[in-house]
Length: 326
Ligand SMILES: Nc1ncnc2c1ncn2[C@@H]1O[C@H](COP(=O)(O)OP(=O)(O)OP(=O)(O)O)[C@@H](O)[C@H]1O
Ligand SMILES: O=P(O)(O)OC[C@H]1O[C@](O)(CO)[C@@H](O)[C@@H]1O
Ligand SMILES: [Mg+2]
Image (cartoon, rainbow, N blue to C red):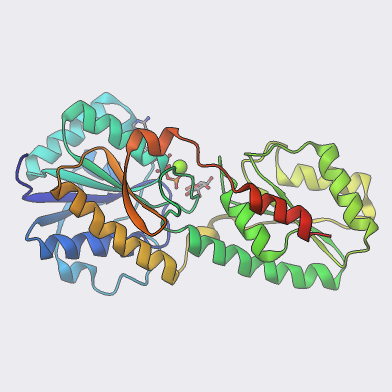
């Protein structure tokens, strides 16, 4: 195994609270192990554009509690091309980088897997995405903070919904995954959740809502994952209002506020553990793997498994929504 003298670290895809805590852990662990560490600014695009700078323990002072990412993030189109990845590799050689740590989601790991195979450079991934849609880790960095943000917002909407006896459709993030909608739904007492993993028909939804209305509930909340199957949340709510004007339905789209804010304790600890584990993995000669946390143990999960294997939504939680919404 080639000696590790210099590691590069980057954040990629949607930012997630706790990415900074992970960067800090990687940088401080490298210092501890006497390995040089450089930060790549703006994800894979920064590798292509040679936007690379030296980091030291003081460059990560005070960032543990900060949302966003000091290294910035990007969704790089160029990295999807062989030519772009070729440019990235030239810059890796230019800076003498021996291995990469990438912090991001499924897309980031897909890119890392291709790059590692093309150029034979060791890459280790740290799961950082609010979506929690990676197999091989119980939680991804940022998910817990996003959940807390969503629940705080839904609680507030519940106050006004109850005051006016209204139905609210609240859209949360999750292009392809319903983890945020489901867990936040249980934690905020949502009456219905709409998830991409469990397609619901309009008639089923109508049936749920009619049942709720017949109970004379003070308010009802439908938490909608953005990737659910029925189309736009506004269209669903408009149709419901046309057929049932008495529900007086309203729509709130929580949007990007879910990605910001200071990370929770859970995310800070997870990010610190996985940041250190990623450097350990490289020192052990690991390659093309994600470091995950399963039942409080660090696991090395091949990128291909983390991306391709399906992490199932918790059917117990789904059942709770219908049992407890009465
Ligand atoms: N097939 C691919 N080939 C090369 N690079 C890829 C590929 N898929 C994704 N990437 C790179 O990874 C970046 C991040 O992926 P993506 O935008 O899907 O976000 P993500 O890592 O899944 O995070 P999140 O879902 O939380 O936003 C892409 O912008 C692109 O640069
Ligand atoms: O607006 P952007 O940055 O493209 O990101 C939106 C997407 O990113 C995610 O938040 C994940 O980071 C998805 O749930 C969402 O669909
Ligand atoms: Mg993703």
